[in-house]
Image (cartoon, rainbow, N blue to C red):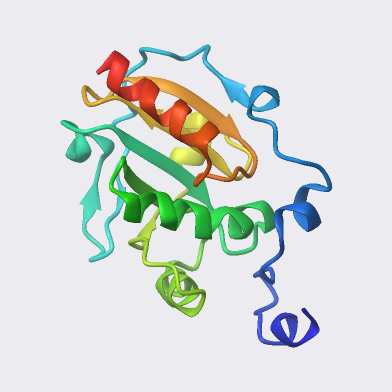
Length: 173
C-alpha cells in the first residue's frame, strides 16, 4: 500500500479494501433510502466524457444506476471495481459521475485503476447539492427516469444482494 500511496496526488486516495474503508461489512439495509421512490430524476446538467452537457433524461428507456463519487473519497474508490463489473455485466447502465473540482483528473484516474467506466463529471457539484449527498451516493432509476432507491456509502455492486436491488428497477419501470 505504501508504494501505491506514494503515486497518489495530494487530493486523491490510495485504493483500499472495503474493510479498510468502512471497518465493517457493508449492510445495504443500513444505507438504503426508499423515501424518494417515484420521484423524477433532476434536470440538472453535468458533463459527458466528451465535455458536452448531459442530463439524466438522456438515459431514459433503460434502468440506470447513477453513482456520485470523487477521486479523493476512500469508499468511492473502493467500490469502483464492483461498479465497473456491474457495468460490464450489462444488467444496468452505470453512470459514475465524479464530483471532483478538477475535471481533468477523472479519466486518467479511472484508466490508471483499470476501470472502464466512462468519465462523467459534475465540476459544479450540482447533483451532490441536489441530492444533499455524502459520497458515495448511488441512485437507481427505472426506465421512466423515476427513482427506485438511493444508497449512501460504499457497497459491493457485484454481489447477489446488489443484483436483487437492481432488479427492482425492472419491477417499477
